[in-house]
Amino acid sequence: MAKIRTRFAPSPTGYMHVGNLRTALYAYLIAKHEGGDFILRIEDTDQERFVEGALDIIYNTLKATGLKHDEGPDIGGSVGPYVQSERTSIYLEYAKSLVEKGEAYYCFCTKERIDALRTESEAQKKTPKYDKHCLHLSKEAIEENLASGIPYVIRQNNPETGTTTFDDEIYGSISVDNSELDDMILIKSDGFPTYNFANVVDDHLMGITHVVRGSEYLSSSPKYNRLYEAFGWDVPTYVHCPPIMKDAQHKLSKRNGDASFEDLIAKGYLKDAVLNFIALCGWNPGSDKEIFSLEELIEVFNYKTINKSPAIFDDVKLRWMNSEYVKKLSLDEFNELALPYYKQVIIKDLDFMKISELMHTRTEIFSDIPSVIDFFEELPDYSADLYLHKKMKTTYENSLNSLEKIAPKFEAITDWNFQNIEKACMDLVQELSVKNGIVLWPVRTAVSGKQSSPGGAYEIGEILGKEETLRRVQIGIEKLKSALN
Ligand code: GLU
Image (cartoon, rainbow, N blue to C red; front, side):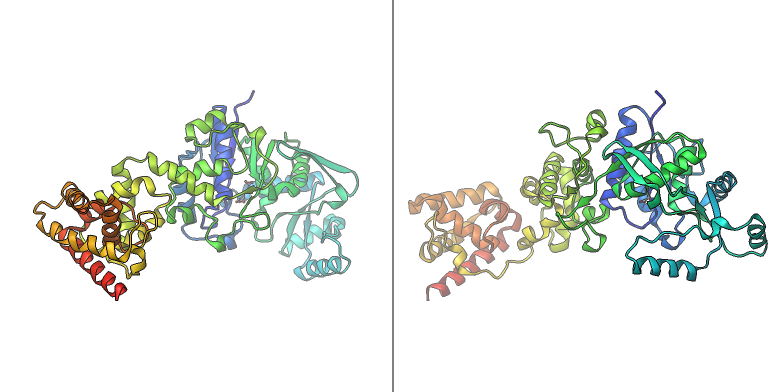
């Protein structure tokens, strides 16, 4: 069997939609599973859509996710150039060869005429279709038009009878009546090819064996098949992937800020978790295993089991998966990644490593961190009701008592650390002959000002330092006193 060659062919749109990244991943996995080549091709023939910096986003995303290409604009290869705008003469040459075979033709219709055709079709509730007007121009008329520089496009010449069938690995065999095939434009009036034409020419010339792309291209594929046939080329294996949806009705969209790889990274997701997650958007390994490294995916991925039905982008699952990857980080790695999020809300010079010890196992995504730890910087304005804990049996009275009695014990600590804070609290529990909670709940509440906090009284007290802890205990005392009045 010939070596498998797949390609990722993004357009430089300025962001990496997760659907596109999944296409890249699947194309990569299909190639690597068989020891094949993964090629990067830039599809920039739509010059109006070109966005500055877009190429960097493509390169950086592939690099960050480990989807290393074997050939591409930046590293070269034997079938370059790998940027479509550098290949315009190739497309024109191939389009002209189709004109010679009668499989394509020059079209000089004005925009006004095309618009009028469209309006007419719409009025008749028909899908707009070019009426082959220019197919019937005489050779002389064509020559004359070309010589006088009249703008033109080159269109595919599709038959009007019969059917075209093509096979997709995921969606099966699809047939369309040729009467439905529009004579699509191959070369635009600006001399650039359309995607519809360039993808066929490039996939052939670049030796692509498996074409992996989104299912939005499914309906155009019969027209691509006709091009392969017109050229007399082998049709590649098609692998169309299902869309990724936000929910049953809505696609993921850039506008909601939930659709791109960069958005997810900015929200504090780890790249490995995102990659693992999207691998499972539309495919499953047929087992319960969900956490996969890229190497493991290469091993087990089988494109024949990609799902037809749309994949739902399940935020809850992504959060869970991310938390699994967070747990796998070393404490140092976690601390380094968490630091920017700490600094969003903490200006004080605290022992951040100690905060990381508390946060490491309870962080799902990094962007959750600031609102969880902001109390270290400033005590929130909380209600005295926080002291009332049913299970712990705390009341305003016993909470006030605990805080008033702990204050001098804290004051007396010379070496302020976890053990000594613990000892002070346990001594008080013994003296009062109460359950631990009667002391610990009020102290934890006083130092955090929150219903829940990472760490308890000792950890938080240690991080805050003696002076700040005492200040917060004092505030608690005042709050409880006024609640009792
Ligand atoms: N340039 C197309 C896109 O970004 C790629 C489609 C394909 O993979 O053929 O959607």
